Image (tube, rainbow, N blue to C red):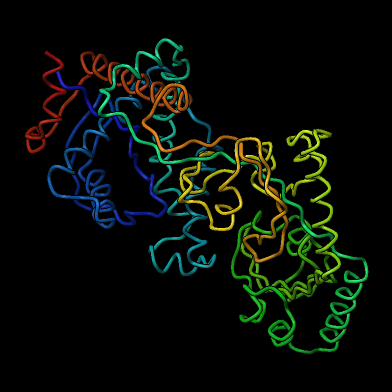
Length: 451
């Protein structure tokens, strides 16, 4: 019998938006797995979402979606039999994550959310609470089945040898990189200048000048300055702690004293608050980075590089001692993560041009000279990059690609295990499907397996 395709399920509400804001008033049960019912609206919701993403193509897609939902329901049914449960806190957390993502796209405006979906955030959470709880139960059940799945070295070799030689993947030239980033330190003189500027603006506000006009003229936050300093509606946890502690402590229309954060000096005005959300605006005055500050940072990193190259300090130690703690690589011993693949491997052709040319002639273990770069907000930083591994274009092989092949082998073993579990569980589980969907070849396999 052909194995049932379980693709680690495209589950209900797995999208970043609410794909089905209105369930159909007229609905019907199209399948039952154990005690779990599957409604026509469940199928149509997922189908319409895929269709909106240009990933749906008629009855074949619906058959695939129905099977995925049935597999999910099989896990949920077993989770209930095994008394696997999820807490209200877990459900609330997942609901908040999804609703907050939608709100961010709407500038945090809950009224706009209500106009668009016809229901408040709280009401939408209640509508989808059961769906999210079931999703988490299915994930917990699946995790409990797969937790102890590992592969031995011999299994990795066996998996690799089972792949036809002409089907082995071809890997382009790739590198793994680690970095140390140093940010220039702002001088006390510049901090004092920025503070005095903020102090003058605060005095003008105290005399009654318009907050929005001053924000537009003086604020150095490019994201809000042109909008009179307006930050929109946001949830608690959006801003840095110092900013947030002051903002949430203000009364409506109250203006704060000067607040210092890592970004500079803020003056905050609370416009409105609704529960855990606030609507505020601010004026930001940032101390400038001088040429002297830049030169000092560059010289410092050059000295760090000298210590590493002369074997006076390990690269990993230098990361912890000197690198910018806010960089994504800091907690991974400096290892850089490819944002496109979420792995530590970069194809050479996908590297930013400045990094590509800096490492092009380097060997594993070599370190670049100090490079000037900018972060996501355009601020100047200095970095050195170490080449950890570097491969030439090649067919997959155990020597160069063992960790990848090991991951492939483990994923294959998990898929085989979960497919076998589903196949076995079908035999002892009550399953009913509407005649209209029994025509799906993949759904028919479920009934063949019960014989």
